[in-house]
Length: 250
Image (cartoon, rainbow, N blue to C red; front, top):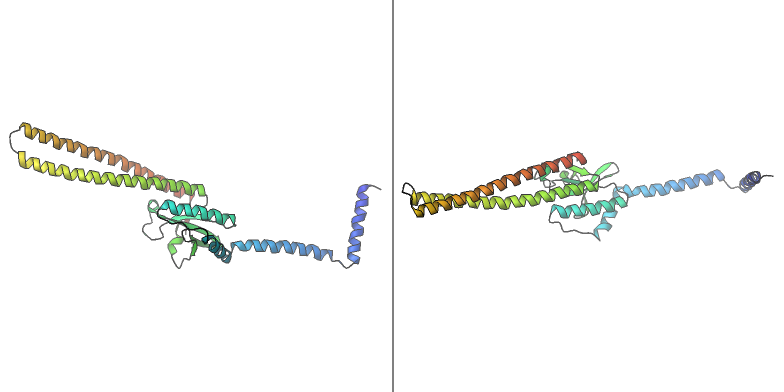
């Protein structure tokens, strides 16, 4: 008798013995499947609002970030989003203006977490690790969201460059304005002192000083023009990044 035939006979006999002993084989298999479904059901409850609230309460006990800039809140969002994804929550990083200061993409200065809980969008403040309802602040449900953290990192890099260049331009504008004020005063004083008079060594010397200051002001103006153009290109890059890689929150 072949080995396969012997194995088949043993299986048939074993099943018969189990049935004679009153063992419900069909019920056993069904119970095993039900048990697996129960485990899956318990796991799926990680996506419920209660599960999210419990996670955030536990997370808040060990995580808090003092936020002073877009870079700080961006870092908090990346850390929280990663932790949420590890627990099975489909977290994305949203950007916008929750204070309602501007709808301009380039002027966005807030970031937070948004996930779908039971098919409903839920916003999370990444600084205080708490759920923000739409009734509390509907602006947390407007803006754009990044599903890919790398896209958000690139957006943050561009925003940091924009902030740095804006600060540089602000300093240059202040110097330019001071230069113009000084040039204006020098020109008025020269006209009052030497206007309509015959040129002298002294007047020529003072005129040279006025022209030198004019050159300084022109240099500031040229630098400002160049930096403002660079800022414009950077702002376009920020808009393109958001519109091409993020999804608008409705």
